[in-house]
Length: 362
Image (tube, rainbow, N blue to C red):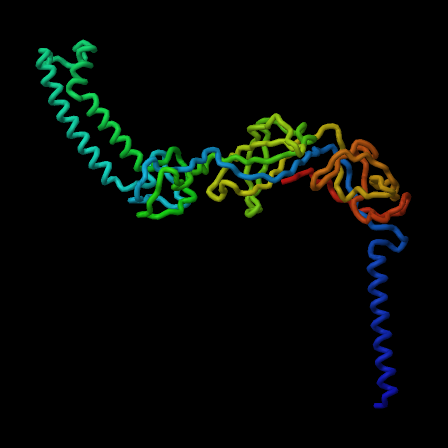
């Protein structure tokens, strides 16, 4: 086969490919039009449905009860009974210092109290009241003989050593979860050192801020939806329990919401997404796909007798799915929700009806 023949065949193949490509382009350009140059659009009917004002914010989880646990004595740690993440009951023993010295001091104090009790009986005998119970002895006489025998002083020393013994232990002040426990058994610890942190994981709040302009949509006990940043598939419920009556320097207002269904997957300090919805009255809700911008004005195309009609609308609010308008279209109108970016007034259209969907922001 000659070179001329090969070049001719290559040119022929290239021409066929270009023709096929042009055909594909023509088909894609015409796929939204019928043979009569009608634009194919989707339409829906404007219905009387709820428009939910949506407020979005970011917040941080804060435990309602959070306590930094310290020993009130200084010594070596003898035993640790919990670890980070453990759930402990109120009053449960978490850790204990070496009690040897204090137990010895307590034993000595109890022996001294026993000796003082014997001297007290002797003093009562001297007064002839050794057979009387303390409740029947005149108070001023009882005070004198207790002081003379050293009973009061010995009793106070025993009470003091028992308190010191209790201070070698850390017990949970409430039902919660252990965190920040970073020391080990045998380590020396002082009363100034934090041994661990106890967090009430069942009572969690979320702290977040909203704009001053959004405050009108918020109220106490209002329900909110909560989504952890690291667990977007998880959804929690909350309610507003506190609105701080002070606008901060940056124009924000501090809000606190209680988490109604906390779980062990939520930690103190965790970031949360907050979503608040409140119904807005006296507006018409339309899908976002229906609105386009023309000459920096909001426009919605309606359908009348097979033609598109240009309507200026007044936009007052929006959420993730819908716009709220007060002028331009009315309930019962059929509006165009696709292929409207380059649509003209009085353009011939072929409509495919799409049933309205209830405004939802779940």
